[in-house]
Image 1 (spheres, chains in turn brown, purple):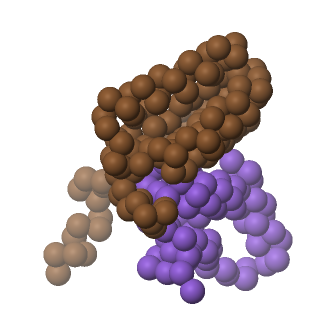
Image 2 (cartoon, rainbow over the protein chains, first blue to last red):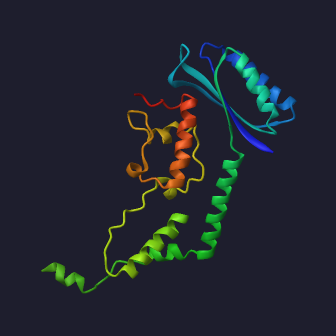
Image 3 (cartoon, each protein chain N blue to C red):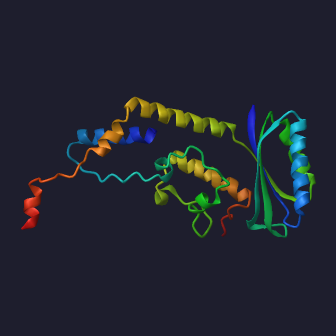
Length: 139
Length: 91
């Protein structure tokens, strides 16, 4: 199973209702191919860092898809054909997530192995109360 | 992380070298300090801190980012440029 992030930008002159239908349409394309959508993140209208075509703004939508990869081809084909979508990017993230998990696990293992030795060491330096240094500073 | 080991090795070498004193640069990778495992390309606020006016990716020698995190950062910035989240480098 692979995890993808499909980000696409919808033209700012699209009606709110049309955006809604567009997103559900694309979601259906994905689910009909046997993949599942883990998350739909509508980032909303935001400024583009550079103009795309004649637009300087766009609606950002991110779909997190769990599937085999064939449905990505289909969605991308649809997005390419659709004029309302001014940009789309698909990124495979399962390997990155796996790597992140590995790092996290290793860190947890190390923390368990050291048994909180680090935190003890950090707590140790205590202010010397009534030490000899005090007298010298008074002069 | 592996960089911890490397620093330790370096310290051992120094002892064998006999009294030569090096000023070790302070480790200052912000991502290591924050224990970041994955840099999201959609996080414009985070990535924006690593692209000075020209829009170029800030080199490691300036930001102090460690090698693995610099690689992740570079990938994220390139992805963000494609998504019009960050500007592309100008001239």
